[in-house]
Amino acid sequence: MAVREIRVYPDPCLKQVCDAAEPGTEETRQLVEDLIDTMYEAGHSVGVAAPQIGVCKRVAVVDVSHSKLGQKHNHGLLVLINPEILERSGSKTMREGCMSVPDYTGNVERAREIVVQFTDRSGQDQVIRSKGFEAVAIQHELDHLDGFLFLDRVDNKSEIFKRKQ
Amino acid sequence: MHFYAVTIIGRDRPGIVSETARILFELGCNVADSSSTILGGQFAMILIVSHPDMAQAAPLEQAFSNIEQQGLSVFVRTLKPGGEKRPELPGEICMISVYGSDKPGIIYRVTRLLSERQINIIDLHTKLIGSEKRPVYVMVCETVLPPDLTTEDVRNLLDSVKQELQVDITVRNVTPVEL
Image (cartoon, rainbow over all chains, first blue to last red; front, side, top):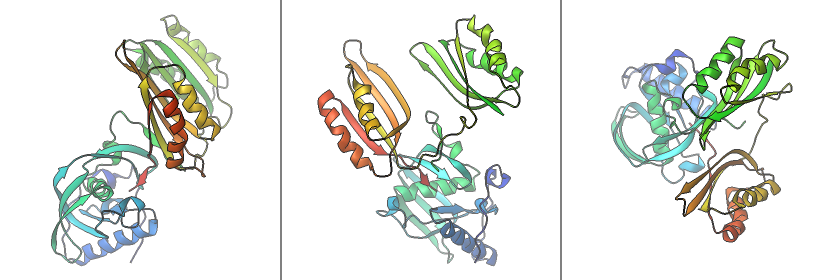
């Protein structure tokens, strides 16, 4: 159990394509625990990806169930090992912020509904359909695994906003 | 560090930005925040620039005198210490869209109501669209609400002008999500 420090851009870790993780190993189990601890410790956070704590592996955790926006549709705590988005539909724009890009937010358009395949904490293969805020959070975290930040996705008409303090 | 706000406006053509950037670069100025857009046929730039030891605006004004001769208007405002820092803006962020047949008083009536309730406008764009015969006025306004107001309150507040001006108004919360 460990809360890890969140890496902040321009940390090179945040701009790399991560390697596949090996489910079932002690290393992956530890990584998942650290991600969960780090996410809940941050309080307001609804997701953390491995590169945000300096580990270049394809693992992320998401939990929007405690957020007002995620009340309606959520799968509780999601541990996503080697996740892949199989389907996307619709679109939804939200003004996103990220712990790795402090102080700024930007409008990002993402799919409203997605189908994701991943390996869960116990090593089981899973496929879920997610929509709304949870789907946006998953897409944001999965972007981290490919070295993308929300800054790479900001629609060109909108500005980068200084976050309200 | 000394801060200045530079406003440049003139008939749009290619090269205004690069010419401005060249002048600032050669003076040793840094460009911090800036925003530029085309309004009507005019290109308008507003830049916050800084310089480590230029304590007077005169060298800036002088450097820009050349492009003023090319038909651009340049205005330099000297910022007081701290004037480059944005004040803290707590509160929900609320986007207000107003649109309808063009008539006098749309901006005034809407913003007067906002200002009476201490609602702070942080971004505002207006545009005249539609045809010449049937012009449509569009106003998009981003605001920060004082702590005692909600998006719903703003919606109710604007209902009266909606009726009176015969315009459509949508109000929505755009407070950022932390991911």
